[in-house]
Length: 135
Image (cartoon, rainbow, N blue to C red; front, side, top):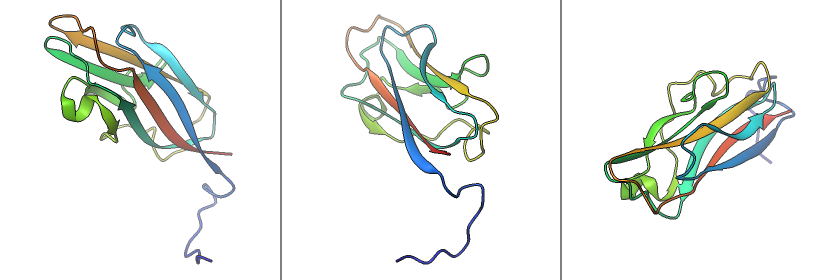
C-alpha cells in the first residue's frame, strides 16, 4: 500500500471525473459542452478527433466559459495541422486560473470551431475532455 507523504484537505474525499463534450465543424457559435459543478477542481483538458479539418487556411477550436471568457480553457488551438487536428491531444492549456482551484459556482463550459480560407468539408468532430476532482 502506498504511503501518503502529505495530504491537503482540499483534495481529500474527491473523485476524479471526466466531463465530455464534442465540437463539430458546424459549431461556429459557442455551444454548451457540459457543466462543471461548483467546488470541483479542473485538472486537465484533452481533445481527440479522427481527422484534422481540411479548411482552406486555418481551423481552430476554443473552449471557454459561458458568460465569461470563451477561451478560458483552450484558446484557438490549431485543428487543421495533421499533428494537432487529429488523434488524441493534450495541449498546453490557456493561462487560465480555472485549473487547480475549486470553482466558486456551477460553470457552463462552451466550445466553438472557427476557420478561414476555403470552407471545410471534412475533419472532426473534436471530443473535448476535462478531468476534474469532484466532491
